Structures are given as C-alpha cells and as structure tokens.
Image (cartoon, rainbow, N blue to C red; front, top):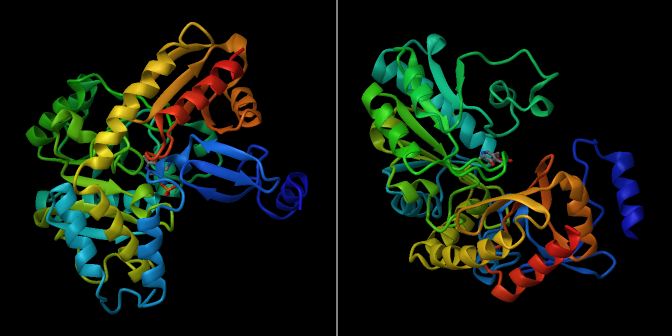
Length: 399
Ligand code: PMP
C-alpha cells in the first residue's frame, strides 16, 4: 500500500485527534526511520523523547525478547521475579526509597496527584476534598480529564468539562507568585515540569527551581517534578532537576523508561510519602508487568554509569551551536538543555507546521508544538554528522 492509501484508510477508520505529517513508517533502526515507500528519514522527534536510546536498541530488544519468552503478565494480584529488581534499581537511580509503576505518563501524573492529596490528608491533616495543588502556566502533563482541568491550552482543555477542582495556576518561572500561592494551608503540593516540554523546551532561569524547592520546604508541601519528558538523560542529566541541584519529593517518569518498546511509567518517592498508599487505594492491570519491568530494568541499568547523560551533553553542545547559526536566518529564538531544543521560526518563513513539512521532504522528522515553535529531540544515539545533516536540511527548509 502507498503512503496515500495508508493515510486514506486511517482517515476513514481512525479518529481525527491527530493531524499526522504525511509519512507512514514501516521500519526503523537507531536514528533512521524508513517509510512504506522505502524512503529514509532522520528521526528528530524520537517519539517526544520516548526513544532516547534510538529505535531498536539491541540491549533493550534483547531484554524484551528474553522476557517475552519467559513471562509477560500476571497482574499485580501476584508478584513476579522482575518486579522487585526493577523497583529497587529505579529507586536507586533517582535516589528515592520506593517506586509505584504505572504505564503512561498521564497515569504517573494522576498517581502523583492522588498521592499528594492522600499524603496531605494523612500527614498534613488537610481534608483531601479541600486540598489544593499548585501548577504552572503553560504546563503539559497529559490528557486525562483531571489533568486537562488545569491546562491553559484551549485546544487541549475547551469542550471537555466538567473539570476536576482543587488546582491553582501560577505563572511559570515566577518564584514570587509561587511563594504567594503557597501561603494557604490547603496547599499540599506543587506540580511542575522542571523544563517545560510541550510549551517549547522552556528552560527556567538558574535560580527558579532552587527557589521553588526552598518555598515548598518552607511551606511543608510536596514538590512533584514531572520528568516524563525531561528525565532519563535527555537533558544531559538523569533528571533535569539535577542541573540545579534540586531534589523533588516526588519524581514522575515515563516515555524513555519503556525504551521505546512499550509504555512504562513510575512515581518515585521516599517511604514517608509513597508509603501512604494502602492495598486497594490505587492500581493498574498492566502497571509493573513482567515485560515492562524487564525493559525498564534494562533502561535503568543502561543509565546507571552516566554514559548516556554525558553523550546528551556533548551532542547537545553541537546541536546548539548549529542552531545558533540559524538565529536571524529563519529562526528568532533557540532554547536548549542537553539534546533537547525548542526553536522559534520567523513568521515570514512560514508556520512551524510548514517548516516540518519541508523538513519531511528533506528527510528529517520533526514536529511543531505551538504555532511557530518546533521541538527537536533526536535519539541520543545520533552521530554528530547526522546532526549536521539535519541542520543542513533545517537551514534549507527555512529559506
Ligand atoms: N508529562 C509530560 C511532561 C509530558 O510531556 C507528557 C507527554 N508529552 C505526559 C506527561 C503524558 O505522557 P503520556 O502521553 O505517556 O500519557
């Protein structure tokens, strides 16, 4: 079937909740995606950072294949021999006591919110019905009804009420507004992306997260870091929070934790926080399943010696220098941390979407996130000459 045939079939029989770029992938390895027509493309989106190790990394595939032949699912009604090792290794990687595995990023966020309200009631004495979680403007934490209740993106939010109450939004990267919002005994937690991904890789000023940490400690509320997109080496550190020496109380992980093979997410915290859950209060049929744990354990093991983090840092310097050359030549702004960049396209060049279409025709996969902004997140296996190839295509697409 041709690309056009595939797209027509999908348009006829799949909901139109995406407007995909016109490529139908058939095969991929490392940074390269081959489409149904046999054309090869450099993947500069990496499934929104879920493919940090590239397509089909041999170690991850080997772990998955070995587990597929052994045991894939028992549900959490019973334990299995990959569960404890995965939880222990992940807890160790992020410096926490324990882990609650789920599947998708949104589920990890939902779990973190339930945890915050339960902790608030049990430990702080704030009735959960009255509790408040402070969030930031421009956030993206997922698509469930509770999560979009505090989204300020009208496309994600409007039309899906009634909303879940109990959230207060403050401007991102405004420590004074955050501190003022915490002056309320009903607040139990602050939920933040340390670097905002969907908003266009918004890196906060250097003193912001340390100030947030201090304000949360002062107010006695939990700092929940949504590292679903920023975590697991993408920014050059295991967690983006590590750049600022900030230790969140709760770390939410997803995307790359599943090695690009399957959805694996997790809530990580110390015993005095995550220990508040009792049997029956939360769960998931697939969360923490043997296949997910085997893959997640391999991912955690791969991340434990710092090699991937160092690679993201050095490649990120190269990507950034190439992007900086384009400022004033089709780009109006560049932000980045590690191998993760947000770029703003000058309006006279076209929309972000048009630039993505031109990149596609030049063999590079990238996605606009808001209007004029594109997010670049190649797999961390990308080579410097592949970055150069993509940047040459970008320079040409901006003309
Ligand atoms: N949190 C953040 C920071 C994200 O970027 C995303 C997805 N883009 C999510 C949560 C939701 O993850 P998922 O799509 O796996 O539900």
